Length: 345
Image (cartoon, rainbow, N blue to C red; front, top):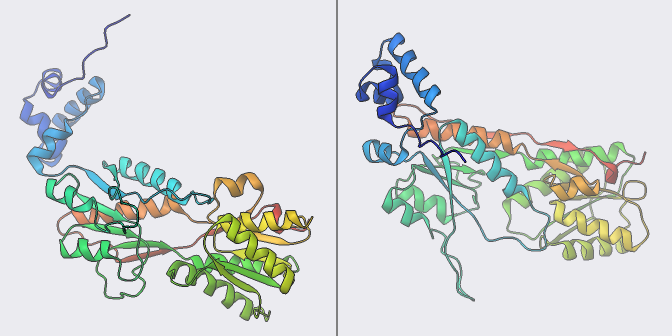
């Protein structure tokens, strides 16, 4: 077997290009200082040798790690929620293209009966200057993560609106869930449904309340009744199934719009127990367009998470570049992925 060639060094690049090591360093970090022909010669040498700059050395020199911190929450059992997985993948790709890498971390172990530390993991990274900035994904009212990071003057952007803080100065990107649910409701009405039920989360979730508002707004605009046609439960398959069964028995809806794919899967189970076919007998729409929805033929509202990631990374770059302002807020539109669970054809 051939012995693997060791990685090229800055000295190797300098020798091939016929320049000094400082010139190679300038080509990487300050290309504007070089003549075009010299810069081109160094770039050709870098490409030929497949040279990768030493990120640790660059960190020591510039105090920039080119790392973005993202805290992962605990795994959600018995749900179809895969949106965070898709978002993390999209963020990693968008960051890589911008020259950054994503550092995933947790909030630490939580003893039984104790609440998790909302700033767990953040302070350690801030003290060690291991990351340049953070991406925050929990933006509920009074979220101690955004408050704590702002107090520490730590750069961060948020996936989610600062719901009740219109004066928030940090950049954020979000998806218009109300618009997505309204589109789902209008789609079911176009399929001939008039008794369209809402299956959402228990009070306290601003995201859930926003999605419910989309259903209620669309039902009102369409002149359809809403009384007795909604339920609020925990985001679980079994809870969704029980709520759907109760609504089917008491209010006889012919379609369901759900706050998540998890709840929608519960509805599908309740329909199966009654020998009803999704689409033909009862229309069902979920939210998040998870892999489960795609496999089961479930119509679902799809968030443009790849676009969210691109906007977040652009906001990070603007935030970290001196003299460059970032957009304070971006609200993106979701799409409706129509499948057999909501069509009568």
